[in-house]
Image (cartoon, rainbow, N blue to C red; front, side, top):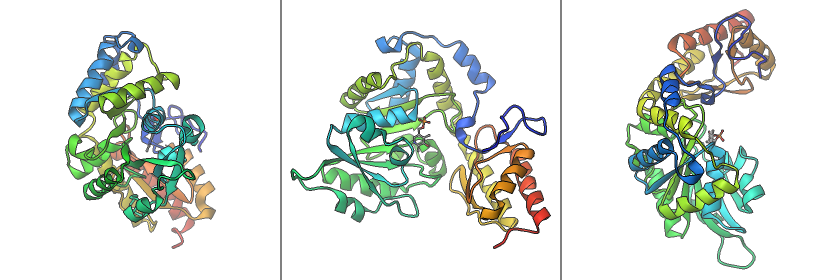
Amino acid sequence: MSAASPDETAIGRRAIDLRSDTVTRPTAAMRRVMAEAEVGDDVYGDDPTVNRLQSVAAERFGFERALFFPTGTQSNLAALMAHCARGDEYLVGQEAHTYKYEQGGAAVLGSIQPQPLENEPDGSIALTRIAAAIKPDDVHFARTRLLALENTIGGRVLSPEYLREATRFAHARGLATHLDGARLCNAMVKLGIDPRSAVAGFDSVSLCLSKGLGAPAGTLLFGSAAFIDAARRWRKALGGGLRQAGVLAAAGLYALERHVERLAEDHEHAARLAAGLRALGLDAPAPQTNILWVKIEPADVAALRAHLGAAGILATVGERTRLVTHLDVTRADVDATLAAFSAYYARRGGPDR
Ligand SMILES: *Cc1c(COP(=O)(O)O)cnc(C)c1O
């Protein structure tokens, strides 16, 4: 990690921050709607802006209800706890956020056993693996209750055909289905499909407003009325009952109206960045959405990180470097990043391949 902050870089200008799409800051127009939002106490259900966001989003995604959460981690956890009781089990990918990047919250706080399964190179979980992992009704075993998938996963888009098959299969075996759709809008825009098609087959979906959509905080959880009632109870127990949350919900509404279609720009920028890195001789496969991966030789990791930092570029540099484009990354930023990579490799005579 670089020591530079986004506002103060070694070269005295705004940093180019490619660490994540969580770093986006509310635009001036978004801040205006936040400042003017009508608010009330959302624990009492009194916040008109939260209520409007929830009903607009539920209608758009074709669910009975939606519920606003402070974070995606909490939304996923409340969803898992609403689907599974103590001693139940959920099937989940080894690479999934809910399994790998949430401190095992389902087990720690929900008494839910995860059954992690290998992800295929495209991010899916093979139906044969799912079938083999479902436990029979036997006192020795946890009760397998839920299949949880993630889309996009590491920037990869799961195909609608796969999602249809996997959710049908899960339902046929008596499992519920949850989608961690933190970046679902990126998948929708990439495939050119509508929100309802993107969530088809899922009993619940979690969608982050605070990633590429550019809101400062907030995640929506979708499901049936009974499911959302249960999730709302868990949200309170998990410390997520917010009061005048309308200031955040206003940003979420604005993001859903104004920042979905533009995700295509982030995808274009990521593709341009990857193509430029390949032109330098680096191994950087064409990304499907706004996340690209580039291989860096172990001997270059520290020096490249320092070089980029000195050029005002914040990036998580490692042997598998992840670069993320978003609302606050312009085409000029992409070109400046390519220039910095180019200067680094020119000095050292090109990457080893
Ligand atoms: C970011 C993210 C979440 C939730 O993250 P929070 O930081 O808790 O909002 C969940 N799943 C995926 C795939 C994510 O990328």
